[in-house]
Length: 181
Length: 240
Image 1 (cartoon, rainbow over the protein chains, first blue to last red):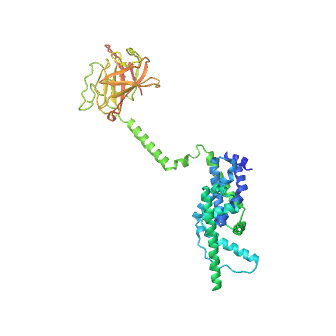
Image 2: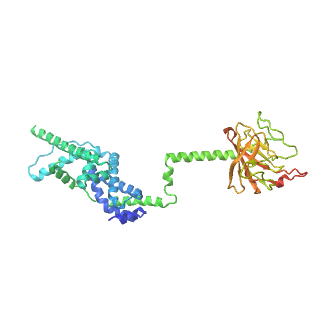
């Protein structure tokens, strides 16, 4: 659906590229925020990715693959932006999760636990979880968008999930010990 | 990964912004318009290209070489060896020129005008034949660099003063400068060629010694008709 816009943008049409950016910018923001967990850094990463895309759009061979191509650039920019800001490595002080009764609050508790665990993952692990579970892409496509071999994608997804699980369980154990004390 | 784990992760990803603020689009727009303006300029990308270290180094090297070449070309003309001229070297012993035959005193830059060619060559045009410039044509060859690798070809085609360790190789260039004929060689002072000198005009003979010591040698054809009153200046017009 973006083919015409991509073709125009490749010929230097700023308006066409602006329209393209508005069409895909929201999803890019969603990806960047979920990888980086920081709105400001995510906005910077998306903006940088769009500018890089404008510069390099002439090198895009298949106009139909614009969005995957942009996601690949976006992932690179997320990594770069995180390194620049240093925020992704911010050490979080682990607080004991408050225990509430009821289903709705236990859901919030689960989310907090996952959030803490997710922030402990590496950027590469976060990215593969986002592409696989947020965009709901098959691993072949995830590997393509992350510019990694399929085997690496499978292995990375496995390790990311294991690390997430281990981190959640460790949190749960720490939390129960504090309550026991 | 269990189904519940997958659901938890997906639920976790459900929250979060999915809109890009307008200010980001505006900022991006400003940036890409700047890039677009740069592209519209003539020679787009030359600036960034020149910022490449290797390209910059190559440009600097080219400028230095050009400056050296310009300096070299501005050097005074090399001395002509022969009667009244400097001795080519302590080891070279050029034979004397026939008396009464003037020798060009200024060489210019490799080219003199030969107003008339009488005798062109002898023998089969396909086979290298002695280059017999009709008497009294002579060719004086002297090195650009002032190295003592000068050769002087006398009217009968024999040479003298061939100096230096290498055998010079002579190339002949047509007046229109479209033909570079390398099949001419100077061997033991004898210039031979299979090229027919049938076109009057400006000729350039350049001789390059095979040895590095002998660099480029310029051949000058002089045309002093051995008449009682030879007008060399009328027949020889050095290029500016």
